[in-house]
Every structure is written in structure tokens, then in C-alpha cells.
Image (cartoon, rainbow, N blue to C red; front, side):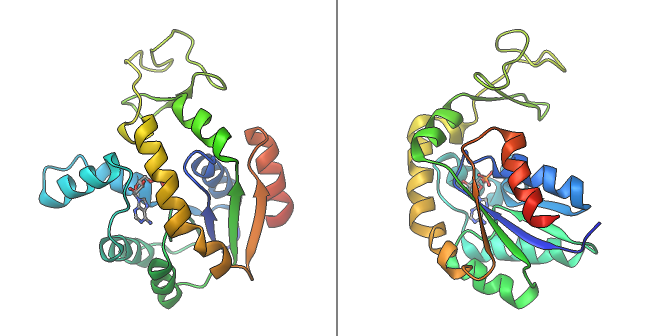
Length: 206
Ligand code: AMP
């Protein structure tokens, strides 16, 4: 168990969520995913829920003020090390984070656009939270969850048109963070399979 404060950065489809979970487990960290927080909020029957749903489903970012407030509140209740998955995503978010947290490492998972698009378009979700991939992790029965047999679906924000928009927004708003964090940045090659990517990360964090 280490008291690391880590940020994991990477474009949609880079596998940052998967790696973040593995890192959290190995080093006893709290995994804080703003994407997961917002996906839960978008199902709420409220003005904020509807605003967030509209933004996420169209590949846009949630406004900085809403995002910063949610993360600041969350970190206030965490009393161990943490890995931030999906935050910060803009320079104003990084500036705000600086005021309420120190950062030890920023792990950046690099993957080519071609790999990203093919990975995302083959991803399938189950309403129970389990995820599959038509190529790398297919369900035993086509279109059905191995665990609960419910029908699998494609996330609205993983449809090809929205994926293109998400990549564009990532390049415009999040890529500048690589330079912002250059002193603590660790570049990881995200092209190989999941265990191989994790090996590279362990080499740095161990
Ligand atoms: P993710 O699961 O990390 O790809 O996040 C899914 C979606 O949630 C993103 O495409 C954004 O619409 C929204 N989101 C997550 N984190 C942030 C953030 N830090 N700033 C703005 N929007 C975010």
C-alpha cells in the first residue's frame, strides 16, 4: 500500500480505465473515475442529469466548474492514495487540482488513432456493468452477458460518429496536459495487450 497520487491520461480506447483498476488494486489506491461518476449521474432524473447525458452522448466534455466541484468533494472524503482516471482533462481542471492535491506521477497511455477506433467500435457493455470486446474478450454466447445473460449493447458515446468527436476534443483540450505535466510524465506504450501494458507501469511504480 502506497500513498501515491497518480493521474492516468490517455485518449478514449487507450485502456486507461482497465489499467487504472489494476493499479488501484496492486497499490491499494482509491480509483476515481470521472467517467463512471458522470455515467451514474446521467441516469438521474434531474436537470444536471439531462445536461450531462446530452454532453456525454455527443462526445463533449462536462463543463470545468461542475467537474472540478465533483472531484474536489470526492477527494475530500478519501483518506488514502488515489488514482485519477479521466481527470484532469483540461488546463483549467489541472490548475484547480494543483490547489487541492499534490501529484506524484502522470501516466500517459499512448495508442495510435487507428487502434483506438477499432478497439472502441468492438466494445460491448452489459447493463450489469460487465464489459466485453468482440475481438479480445468475446462473450461465450453472441450478444449475451456470460454472468447474467442480459443483452449486450454499445455505449451511445462509442458509436463511430461520437468516437470521432471524442478524439477531436481529446486532441484539442487534453493533449496540452502532456506538456503541462512534463516533469512527472511517464510515457507508456498502450499498443500491446493488457498484461504487457501493466508490466510497463509496474516497472515504474514498483
Ligand atoms: P471516460 O469514461 O473517462 O471516457 O468519460 C466519459 C465521458 O464523461 C467523457 O467523454 C466526458 O463527456 C465526460 N467526462 C469524464 N471526465 C471528464 C472531465 N474530467 N471533464 C469533462 N468531462 C468529463
